[in-house]
Image (cartoon, rainbow, N blue to C red; front, side, top):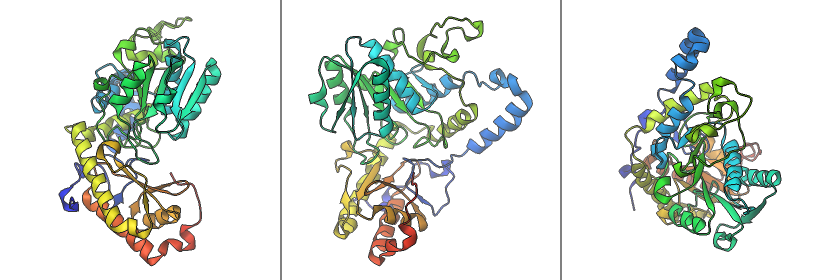
Length: 401
């Protein structure tokens, strides 16, 4: 068994967390990264207050979506000019699903996994209604049976938000493309926590958010990846002014910008984008492979402690045991999951709950240590053995992120 002391955090000093905080909720909202507050202060007090409209050029606001996309690209195995930061994950899914149907005329089917994050399924249904397509919802092991010559695109999460189960990106992409369909990955629970290499596996498209493991702040803009081979033929549906080839010509007719810029539509939320750009500095000098190894160690330790301390106390394990089959997350099952999570939060250990019975712990390798994992398990043991979770204050249901 790996000892907790053998797994230090990679760079806890790059985020602002109290020394005694056990924060295992980075798969919902990452903590404030060092440098973000200062970057925001400059953006407000200098660029906005003093430069005002000149800041679009003088502060580099106009170029920020592509610039931040290039900075993020190395964390997902993409090249320069293949990632743009814009909009939300939901909007970017809409763009890419619609564009994929246009790239595969005569193939009217979108495939999604029914247990993936609900937005992915909702947007697939909305795109299908708008474009006269249909959606095939599959179980986690139902992909092969769903693939045929009618499928235009398959959209799947690399890491399932509820269980932490991880798909084999290379094998899945190859199977999908072998049937002539396009592969679109949702990386919301991957980027910044485990290794991702989109170009190595030959992925067509990907989306992801900026506020979870990337620590970009609440409402941080999302990002979109499109493999370079699609740039000249992609026809995305949200043809806004920022995606025009010559925006400042103010032409009444739309002409798509070259490359990844054609996926822009509306004005970028600059303050949020500035926060995300500053937060990405926390990953400077840290390779995705290092994140991958540390995440495997942290989740492996948690599962070892689960076997020793939690399984005998009535908990179940929702996360796969094999390191290659899980993300940087461990999910437990217990009939009193909600109350136990609330009791943990009251004791300074932040995890979260997913209905109906899942305790979810995001083990962000950037700032989580083995000592944090051991402390979380020890608190769970204490809460269950003392039955503190049965207190009425821990059973009053409210929204939990």
